Length: 281
Image (cartoon, rainbow, N blue to C red):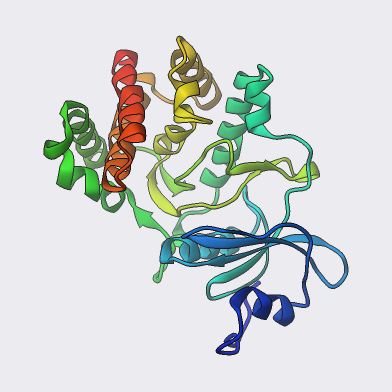
């Protein structure tokens, strides 16, 4: 549900939204470069999460959540500008903990199910301008611009991405950042996603990042990528060679972003996942 009217100038943003929507803090606030998150309770005691975007990408994600109206994602209770009030995940299950407890396959299936629910949302209404969605050719622009400067895996990934983008299949609304920390337990509503990037493109793309998570170290454990790749194929009925090419392309793109952020260790580790993905062809 959207709202009207600006926050009073000079008022601290988080306090202003608490006052405006009659919220009270209900946990520790977390602030990053991209957003501020605060667990809160509404006037009637309902647990919720207040998120204030600091960048356009996060604000676009809030708009997509609003438009999806709870389809595969957390419901939006209030929204205006950079601020969004979301239903809070109150279930006890945690996908990272499931992996650590030896239930990696179950966690992967839960992630696939959450992505599938989003993919089933009607696409046409989300493409009406101004759309909260970004197309995949735009999303891959940094890889296309820098592939030759970085390494053979990046060049190979860029070539795969161009081939796939030139002949897309099954174009849907994409979450864009499906991983074990972005799909939470919402109790009776099941596993739902938060923090979408808001993309549009081939549905296979959305299953690549989860194969690199919950950490690069976990993804690179012997046999793990191959096994979870098989779980994804079983859960989604995707074409295995095509998903493998998307995975190489995604790893090359992710590695490029880490290189731009001057994080060579993670640039190298996700590139190593991409090199292993080449053997899945």
